[in-house]
Structures are given as structure tokens and as C-alpha cells.
Image 1 (tube, rainbow, N blue to C red):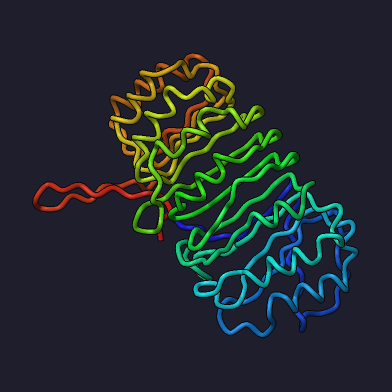
Image 2 (cartoon, rainbow, N blue to C red; image 1 turned 135 degrees about the vertical axis):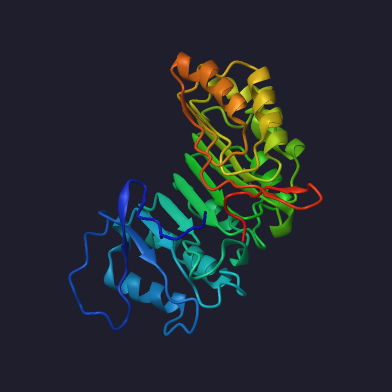
Amino acid sequence: MTIGEHLDALYGLPSFTFPGPDAPGDRLPEPDSVAWRLGGNVYDSDEAWTDTFARFRAAVDTTRVRALIIGGWEDAYDTAPTPIVEALLEARDAFPALRALFLGDLVMEECEISWIHQSDVTPLLNAYPALEEFGVRGGTDLEFTALRHGALRRLVAETGGLPVEVVRGIGASDLPALEHLDLWLGTPDYGGDSEAADLEPILSGARLPRLRHLALRNSEMQDAVAAAVAAAPVVERLEVLDLSMGVLTDEGAVALLSGQPLTHLKKLDLHHNYLSEAVAERVRQTLVAAGVEVDLDRGDADEDTEDDGTVWRYVAVGE
């Protein structure tokens, strides 16, 4: 699996790409009717992202903008979006209605997920205290310092490898309104150096009283994550548990089933897995009969076995 398409919506609004400097001067949509995508060519860009942003501010009533999607910037495979972050910080007073922001909407053809350079995103959340949704793609140089944000309801970090300090920063944050947390933990090969123990502050749920949807996925250590989740206090208040896209084997699934009951869930998502049919059937019999929607689609989770018997298994999104 790769990321082949840009976001088509954010904050319930359809995405609309702000036209380039040479595009026809067609009428633009109402400022609050779309999620505005601002981005250019990663390679040989004719316009710096900050220049696109300046044109956008001149053409659109930003006081009515509710959602921004930050797309490609020049040399994203080698350059952090620091100027973008600084421009958004400088413009904070011009966006009083902003409720959703996604940083790094790049697809494989533009930049592999593990190549996307990021930066410290904490200043953005501090600068926009009314933000309800925040997402970021790319883990290289990504930083997230512990904070308190009273409005944030949805937090997403899509990476091929999520740095442990980001996991710890999120776990140490007070997010009383957060309902949806989605972390792509990734693999050590791409900077994912956390361990299951680093998830404990999240799994305790102490700082996440309203959490209803928890996704800890795309992980090479998915069995250990499943075992930790099996006894996690936060699970009893969840509606959706997502452990998909990783290297989940029978060991992790059995640990999950052997822990606390999961029959209160609306959905358990385990797609892209390495389960035997016998264990997959045990999951179905335990949960589907109780009314839980279960996704066990194996997808493209194929194993490679070497002549010496070594078995290689892969996360859904790595490079």
C-alpha cells in the first residue's frame, strides 16, 4: 500500500486546490465552503509556497476559512516546512475561523512518506487554540512537545516511522476534548524508535477523557501494541479500536482476545494482518456475534520466506 491520492476532504469539507499563478481567473468557491489546499511542485517549483500563501491571502477572505490543507513545498524531500510554519504563525490573526489544518499532503509520486521532512508542529497548535482537527504526514525531524489544547478533537500523525519523542510528547499532552487519535508508528528503519511501553500514558487515558477512536497502526511491533492494549484502561471507553496496517500475527491477536472484553466496541480494525485463518475465525466468533464490526481483510500483507527459513513481514506504509 502507498499513499497515491491527496486528501479529498478535511473537517467535512471537500478539498479545493488554490489555483497556480498562471491558472485562468475562474471564480473561487466561498471561503467557508471548502478545505483549501495550498501546495506546489516539490521538484522545480515555479512558485515558493510562501508566495502561494500570499496570493491566497490576497484573493480569499481568510476570516471565513475553516480548513487548510498544506500540500507540497519545494524540495520537501530535503527541506523542512519551517517557512510554512512561520507564515502560518504570522497569519494567525487573519484566520479566526480556522478549525482544521493538515500539514504535508504529499503523495508517493511527489515524495515518499519517509522522505518528507517535518519540523516542530507544537507552535501551530499553540497559535491556533480553536483548532479542532490537526494532521501531519511525514516523520523525519517531526517534533511534538507536550502541551495543553482545549479544543482539539482529532489528531493524526501519518508516518513510516514516528519518533519516540513525538509519541511521548503526545502522551504527556493534556487534550481534554480529543475524541480521535491516529498514530502511524512505523518501523525503526524509518525512524520509528518507540516501544510499546512508550504508549502507556496514552493507553491509561488519564489525559484523554473523551477519546472514542484510537488507532495505533502501521507498526512493526503490532503484537506488542496489541498486548499492551489488551489491558489498557482507555479501551473500555472506546468505540473504535484500530490496530491495522502493521505486522499483527497470531501472537498479538490472541493476546488481544485474552485481555479485557472488546464486545462494547462498534468496530475493531485489523486490516493488513498476518493472522492464520484459525485465529482470524476466533476473532470473528468472539466479536462479530456480539455486534462488533471487524475488518480482517489481509490485503497485500504477503510474507517473504528466505531459503534459511527467515520470514519477512512488512507494514502497509513504510518508505
